[in-house]
Every structure is written in C-alpha cells, then in structure tokens.
Image 1 (cartoon, helix red, strand yellow):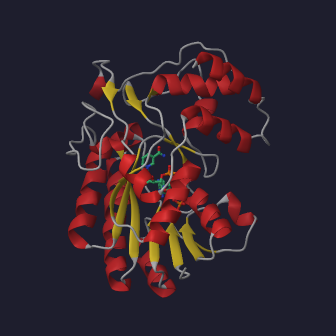
Image 2: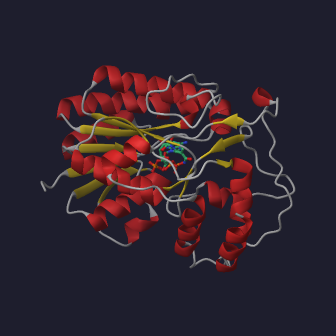
Length: 312
Ligand SMILES: NC(=O)c1ccc[n+]([C@@H]2O[C@H](COP(=O)([O-])OP(=O)(O)OC[C@H]3O[C@@H](n4cnc5c(N)ncnc54)[C@H](OP(=O)(O)O)[C@@H]3O)[C@@H](O)[C@H]2O)c1
C-alpha cells in the first residue's frame, strides 16, 4: 500500500490523540500534526507535532502548506451542545471557519479532507438516523456542524465527513466518562436534554478513520456503538464501573429543552460497517475496554463489569 503523509489537526483531543496513536503504531504512514497543548502520547514516540492553536488560521495554513500532506484529518471542534449554546463565536470559529480554511488548503494540495460532524445535525424525532436522513438541527452545535458539512460538500470532492454520536476514550484531555467521574454528584451534571444515543468508543473511531484513509472512501459516514441507550443509563453504567452508588444523577435540562421529553438520537452504522468491514462494539465491551486502558489510575473497575452484566 502507498505510504501517505497524514496531518492531524487538533491532535491532543480525544479523537485526535487516539488517531495519532493508532496511525503511528498500526501503519507506515508519515504522521504530522498540530495542537495547542502537546498530547500525552507525544512523550512516547517521536512525531512531528506543531504547537499551534487551530484558531490561528493563517499560521496553521502556512504550516500545513509547507508539510504538504496527502490527507488532513480535522479533529478540532466543539462537541458539547451546552457549551456551544453559551460560546457561539468560539463554536462557529472552530466548527465552521476552521473547516472553511481546511477546505481551501485541501483544494490547493489536492488532499483528502476528513472532518467530523455529529448526531445533533438531526432533530431527535426519529433516531437512530441513516446517512441520507434529512438534517434539521435544534441547537447551535447542530447548526454549526451542518453549516460546515454543507461548505465541505459544495466546495470539494475528496472529502469524508464522519458523523459521531457521544464519544468516550481514554486519550485526550478529557471525555464524557472522565467528566462524569469528575462531576460533583450534589450539583449533578448538565446534559442538553434527555435523549437516546449509541455511544462510540474512540479507538473504533480511529480504526474507521484508518480504513477510510487507506480505502480513500469519500462521502458521509455514520459511526456509533452497537447499542442505543438512554444517556442517563449510560451515566449509570459508568458509575457502576467506578463503583459509585446509584443515586440518580441530576440531569438538568437547559431552558431550551425544558419539556423533559426523551429525544431519539443515535446513528445507524450499517453502511459504514459494510463498507469498512468493521463491527462497532457494545457499550458494555466499550466501557470494559475503556476501564482496562484506564487501569493505571486508582479505580477498582473489574468488579463493576460483573455488576453491569447482571444489570443488563
Ligand atoms: N466527543 C464527542 O462526544 C463528539 C461527538 C460528536 C462529534 N464530535 C466531533 O469530533 C471531533 C473530535 O472530538 P473530540 O471529542 O476529540 O474533541 P475534544 O477532545 O473535545 O477537542 C478536540 C480539539 O479541539 C480543539 N479545541 C477544543 N476547544 C478549543 C478551544 N476553546 N480553543 C482552541 N481549540 C479548541 C483542541 O485542539 P488542540 O489539540 O489544538 O488543543 C482539542 O484538542 C470534533 O469535531 C467534535 O465536534 C465529538
């Protein structure tokens, strides 16, 4: 297989660092990247990482044009709907403007652009959604991601847009599981609304990216875990693993979604699984893998796995 040069933008995030690690250990491709803070994995291997924020568009452009990659994987972005609603400018800059710049760079270099969108481009009325279902975002995060999708689709051909549901993975600065672990149980943890989704393990996202790069597949792809779960149950599964008690977590809906109605999100993955010859794992296996990788920390997680199996 032809060796490629791959530039990972935002390589210190959950998907970014997981992809950085997977591509550098599983392939012979040349890996280059950029991030504001160096990822942990950077300590383990010698990689060519540029220390620059994804928001410094001109500087980043210069660097990527100089590196001349065949593939650009854009792992920068805002994914928390509550944060996006409160930080609209930052969300637009990172989710839309950055993508516009990367589209322009990809055009010049004739590079394959891979970028991420999310389940929030849909309205949550009839999930899990297929790739060709009609988007209809109900919040700012979904609107920003849809604007980026549209820009990519109308300006270049050599692109892959990977839509993701809720992601969990041990690398990167933080992720949903670590946020739950760190949450103050008295105050609770704010979720945008009550909803169902199919949480996906970051390692499988990275595996899928690796396959998309090698097969040069283009278009929109849905990734997601094997089970659709209520996000509240997912929080409880996490807490079983970390042996916390099952006192209900206070899921405070924001003002925008105060009805309390359970929305139906999640992404159907049959097309991606068939095209990429891969099978996404279940929430239980994913969390087991997560806590296995996490074992260097102080949690006694294994007992939690048996308790979770009983519960399911
Ligand atoms: N996590 C999820 O549940 C989820 C769900 C659906 C879609 N996605 C999408 O998947 C992609 C990767 O997600 P992820 O979970 O890996 O993201 P992440 O860990 O939260 O962050 C990704 C990167 O975005 C950059 N970033 C975030 N906030 C920033 C800020 N205020 N200023 C400058 N840069 C900032 C950072 O880049 P540096 O490395 O340069 O510091 C960070 O490492 C994103 O496009 C995201 O929207 C994620």
